[in-house]
Length: 204
Image (cartoon, rainbow, N blue to C red; front, side):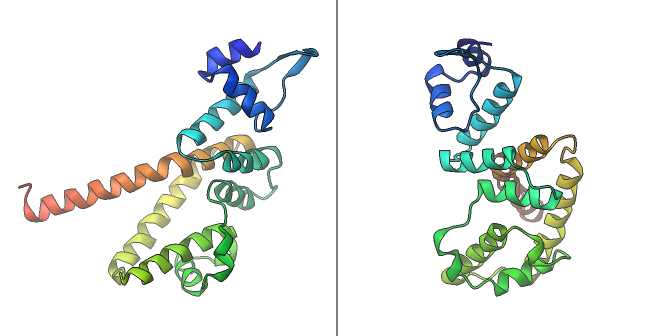
């Protein structure tokens, strides 16, 4: 298809497609002349991933990280999932200053080792714990135990649903699940709290 058809089918403007081409997050089409190229379904799928990430607030640098994982996926499934997650939530400049001890201990409660996780994931837990400490807020042990139990179950369910037919499908699922589903999880958490309060105290 020509770039105009790719634009029409994807809902992405020609100017934006050309920008993605310049930024090398969308692969070049097959050249038919020095100034023209044709594009296929792979370009359409890639545009879908890019737009979903952009709509979820991921900047072009994050999109570039995701594309790098898509184009050079690690062989080990665990490494693939970690790389995809880190692409959306990359490490921050001051992560080297974080005390990872409490985060590693909390991660171990899921039944594994912190070294089984991508570095950015453990650092994200450490950043969250540091923010709680600075605010003087302590998550009660019973609540923390519930987090571990139920988020562990969510992790198992997500893994069961991760596509296995291709690395691109797996990365797309993890990346979009991270960028787009996490806000849903947070919103449902608030709904669950409200429902619990209603059952306990009444809807008034």
